[in-house]
Length: 428
Image (cartoon, rainbow, N blue to C red; front, side, top):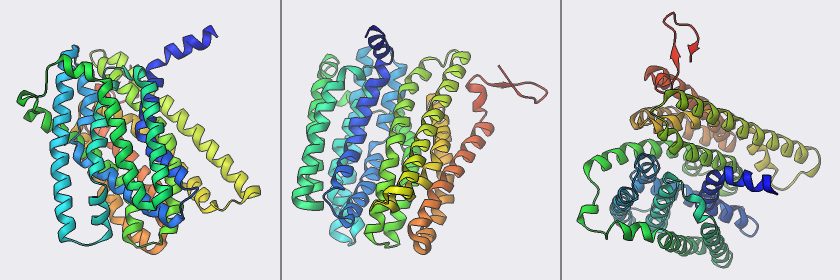
């Protein structure tokens, strides 16, 4: 028992971030998974499309605030300075988000089409989600996420229950209403949890408005994340644009939904290590050791899940033959990308820790150009098989671009890796 307590104490920060991230980012995924039991594949396909659009709107209106909340707050020491930065980041994302929501509503009155209708219908959730994510990132930057575990779990259970109840009762429209109610409840609970920070640094006033330095950093960080998210959602968006039947989108969407579980764990690991990397930038040897450990841990987790998927696919193929066999087949092929994504996520964490936001922008723009050129043709002529190929090939392209960027930008030396004058192997 004592060993268990010591183990939990040792990994308290990681467990806290896991619970925080799993609840905030995974709550909607759990809702979608549970909804698959009582919604039709057609309805599930529509919901997946709506959530893909929402994820782009959320990131587009965040102005990089969550990323800055982790990285920049970790670099500060005093609670007052951290709280003031938190207020500036919340003000920044609310101002931009409100503007985007107004534009989408105006577009709905002028333009027609399912995409515009879905975006305008769900856009308001982005304001709530972004504020929640900024507060969550603040907790990660201050490494106090573990103190919020019970609160976040309770709020997430409530939000998931509301979304499932509303979607079960009213279908897709109920899903949208449930998302608004659930996100509002989570936001209120999170604000109450950090109220001592907000009160301790004074009230909101014009001095809390973001300055150009914060805005420029946020725009650069957000552009990198926005293009990254666009790459990740290209398969779903390409299927929708090619007018592939929504039941097929539902099968593929469920496979991508399952794959989000290991991606979530990898993201949590990344977020735990980011403030630690920032705190050790003064010592290249420590940064190198921390980065190497991050890479090994990420690869180990990715390979473990890949093995589990292969086993599950084999059992289903040989004996079970479930109704969702197309989903299992898609998941089997898509899981080959997991080890590649583990490496690129590790390298992306290092880029963020070093504050090289522009490098991420360049990498992701090139990737979206390459994969975007192939997305629609593959979806149009090969449907789900085409976008599965796109998913795996995109991971290969992303890894190659990250390796190239590290070499060209000399980021290896910033992480404590050096090459001998003779051009031999890296020296330490």
